[in-house]
Length: 104
Image (tube, rainbow, N blue to C red; front, side, top):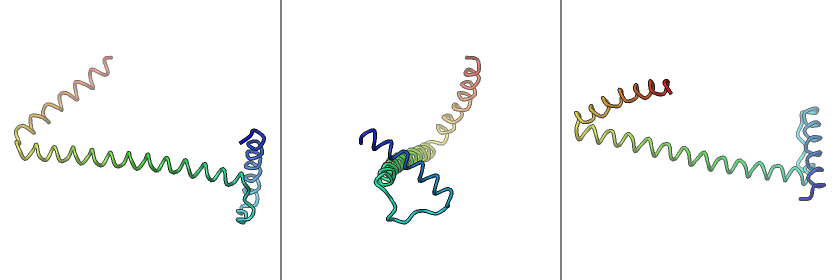
């Protein structure tokens, strides 16, 4: 897209927004221009990227949470005293880490 077409699209976008807010009505389908289609296409592309990223992040979070819970259940079933030692050691370690972080 040339600079002149881009400038035309940007000015058309601002004029369209100004008129749409003043009238509070969307134009009919016939009144859309090439610039409107470019803007909608770019918006659609951005939304697809965000949906893909968010879906991947949620999937990884659920998978990781399931793995952690499964590991803790297996650890508890295999040896309850060992599970107690693991969690008994995590509490002092967490407290020490918080105090040491304040000193630094």
